[in-house]
Length: 416
Image (cartoon, rainbow, N blue to C red; front, side, top):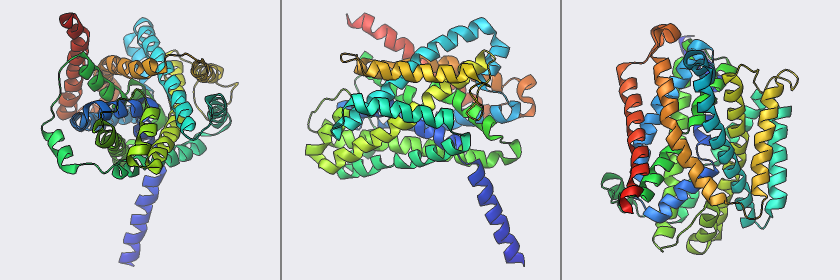
């Protein structure tokens, strides 16, 4: 009887975890979107293994920030955008969200560029792949439910592990990888700084903070189950960094060694084929396609969520169109604009892709500053305000990002 009781308790805990599972893993996995894959691919091809070290502090900060988000969402029952509006006022909120909206339209455009590029590897024209992908994404969100969408998103998250296979097929040099992590050799200039900010901006993207908080609210999570939410968050953060690590390794061990320069993730998939075999390139392209579809769904969804929250409109996948018209109109508009840009023959897709990630990095300190001030406000959080270690890591991330952003702006002036 005693053993049976233990087994029932274990099964109950597993069932509870599976019910809570989702927000952390999905939010973390969407980080490895087409823009992120492009940045990681270019980083590996250009700098070899020398930027792998950036993933270590990025992981630590990512876990701490996601934990703050989840805790704030569960305690207050309000989204981050809602809390910013209530505490900073409408004017400040308006300017913050204009910047975020522009960045997210650029990010969503990048996702459809990823769809187009990955399908071109398999011989499918972007004029076929992009409209079909946009229609599929729109139907999933507008006609589906949160539960169905979440299950599909979790399947997409697992599919991103194909990058591990692609990297191993490139036969990386593990000794060199270890040396680069411990003692990287990197020239300090505006290009390398932009790349570092881009990596941080795509690993810890501003939109994530809003989506994470909204998703724990939509899922109805409570503080009594917070330890299971933390497992979900850590698993998601580990998956994010592991996939990013192997994308950089895949491009560093093949493209960098051969001196091949690339400008987008599709170039990496094409260039891998003669170096690591056709299958390696196809696996890379498949991962890009899955990541692009996944993120083309989540990014405009997150944007519609936080813009509607910020200005007091109804939002949520489980609401009907007539219940939340602003939410669905905004979501549809972002999809249509992003897909339309991709179909323009001479659109500067590479510039949009890279600088949308850099803009993420520049906006991130503003979002983190708001978050940290809110999560330390006892009137909002009660007994669940930040511990000292959370604040040290959070404020440290804000200061480092501001310094890097200022260096990015100042260095070009001295190089003239």
